[in-house]
Image (cartoon, rainbow, N blue to C red):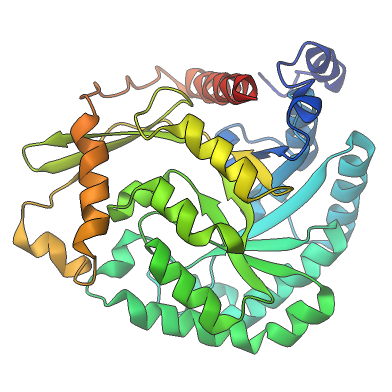
Length: 345
């Protein structure tokens, strides 16, 4: 799809969308699209909304500020109006609000100020949440992760009154290998579950040696929204390999995960975050690897090993020939995943 792909054509696609009847098939679910699924398209927020509407989405998750264009109030009001015209709910987000994380961007100001700006933006655009993260797996070393959790809890407590007054909740993602489920749960309970909850990602648990079903079981009562994708994991001589794949192509029993999510988190968005990657190797046979996981219970790691033991090696994904091919494959991966998810219901 190019920028010339018009809104009229998108609306024509909507009539034939495999998700046109999703709402009636699964009334307790709201299908969403996390725009990180379309991270290479370089569209305006209005093009993103039109595309998502054409594919049956009821929620569009602007997980980073770059996707919504800017936090200028007039831009946000225009995005809100377009979304309302399309019958779409909007969720917005940002990256790290943890001052001690390697991912945090201090040039944008103190974490409290960054989060306050996002709370104000959420009010303007009509988002009930602000999605944010602690960091990534890089923050587990030199560690411990608990010091970053404490840092983030302090930030959240400092903005509690502003979030509560705005009736906006903070949805913290289990992100890129930063926290395991029990660690994220401890953060939420320390900060205040009355205004802090979870953006539950189904692909990231494997990056913390965790069974995604365990993550869902531990965090479902705190879920405010979600990112959903399938994963493949298998054993290799160094330890385990993890790849993110299209829905239905992995071995983490994503079908039962999604159905369980629908049961445990009624009314919450089920947002596709489709990312297809080559394998990432977790070298857990090396002693130094465990410096990042000193508190990992053996029974939890055993559940991860059980899934990996059932997996089969996958060849690396071929690289697209050029940017246009990469953009096209990105859309194809997402649309195939949407179609697969619809069929589950």
